[in-house]
Image 1 (cartoon, rainbow, N blue to C red):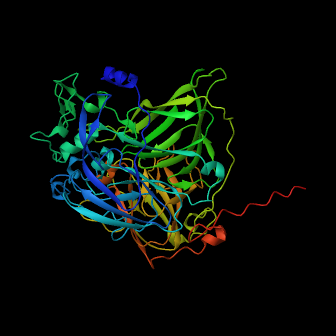
Image 2: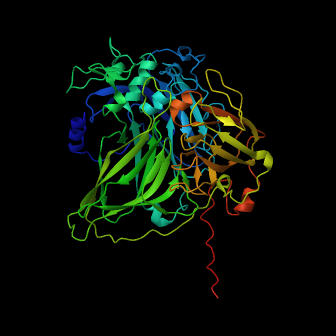
Image 3: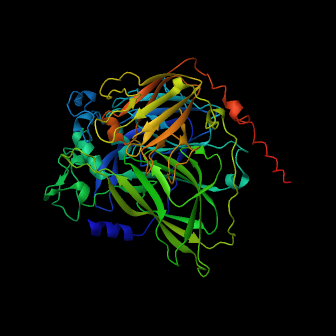
Amino acid sequence: LAAARAAADAAPTQELRVIPEVRSPVTLTMTAVKLPLPYIGGYVYTRAYGDIPGPTIRVKPGDTLKITLKNDLGPGPGVDACDMDHTSLGFFMNPDVICALNHTNLHTHGLHISPEGNADSVFRHVQPGSSDEIVLPIPENHMAGTHLYHPHFHHSTAAQAGGGAHGALIVEDPPGSLPKFIEDMEEKTLVLSLANPAKVMRFEAWGHATLKKGKFWEQQLWRNPVYPDWEWDAVSGTLNEHSSLTGDHLGIDPHVYVNGQYIPKVTLKENKWYRFRFVLAAIEMRVELHQNDHSEDQAACEYQLLAKDGIYLHEAPRRVHRISLVSGSRADVAFRCSCGFLDFNGCTATMNFTALWQPMGVGGLAPTVESSTYKMMRIVTEPSAAKSTPLEKFSVRRPCYLADLREAKVPLRNHHKFEMPQMYPMILKADGVGTLWGHEVPPSLLKIKVGEVQQWKIRGIRYHPFHLHVNPYQIVNIWDDPYYEPGDWHDTILPTSINFATVRINVDRFTGKMVAHCHLLEHEENGMMGWIDIRGKEGTTWKGAKKLDPECYEGSFPGPPTPKPPFPWR
């Protein structure tokens, strides 16, 4: 397998493909597709919206996004195939919670939008052979940003979203909302699909092999043309010629596909700034993007962070040396490369990824963490007459639901503690109380009011990426993390060295069930998910936002912020 990977890495590369873009009304069709495995040989069947990734959906603030979701998957077992009474519910790698793999729905991950009715409700159910009409009114003051969409049907989310059913969703910047040097940047959308074929096949076996092709359950079999006698047994996680070795340790590590391609190349002009929209669709923990150690003949590339999880930094850009993406997160990065003084014909570089992931060893109780580094994308830098110019600092005018909350006064009744244990059971608790999410929807974790600010201290985030639907949250306190800083906004976080953070949420406008869960989606399937009951009058906004940020806006974008007066030097 090492030889197979080396051969695949050395093969000629294709230019990064542009994902097709669509606007409302959109039709997404869930179907079975092949996922090629060039670094192993062969392929597996998985699920996707016609291709991996699905089309990029583009909307503007104030649009109504209409999506027809068609489920063209064949019949298969439903949720009754899961044994929710099993004593191991809530424990790692429990096959009894993986089922209904051909049943689906849709979640627009990152949108500030209603969770009720036929909007972004993860409680909807689209059975095999049926369809659903989803209507998403985007608020007029929705911040422009990079998001994603993926299935969120409990018990099949990990298999579907982790197998390839995902795509980018971009809310476009209103004219005049950005400095011209940012507005004029050429954009490239890069959907990073962190595929783990061992888990894809294991989920399929645990879900009773519902992707059938002909007479065989091809998903249970991995066929490698170099080793035709090696047959993958997805139930035990072994190859039948080497039964003592699990698939996770035979080189079948996760790999990042960029826009569905294995190690593509992207061609850039030297010293030209580009806007890269990174989207990580994965069920693993983290991917860090970094340049391979460059020698004299390699391009030197610079990363300037503009936005995270679809929300601009309060002051951008921010120089970073690595892009840290956790399961479901996004990053908008200004990116440029330069060559050495004597590189008249251009130069190249390699962008690598380091993945932090959890193998699926059968029989083990404690989750283990693996780290693997491989090539992700080749960068070809062509000569250019452009001069190397630094980026100026800027701030955008913000909608009021994203006013800076660090100076807000939060009443004690709105202070809460959330906890996700490092070990077991995999349960999300609020103020010490929680229920494993099995077949039935559990009681709400909290009852809160719309139009108020919440402050939550969250523990367990070093091991579990904490994801919140409907409303993003702002970090107000976190210790010594190289990527997360106080003031940053997110909907999913996983720090590298600290296990807790304090965040604030402006509970804006929308009432109903606000879902929170670990975005390691096998953990969510095992019950680490809950919901918060937002009560009050739909449309209520927090009145304190204007006091903190007088230029924030509730309606459509009113124009760029008022220039700050120069400092009065004496």
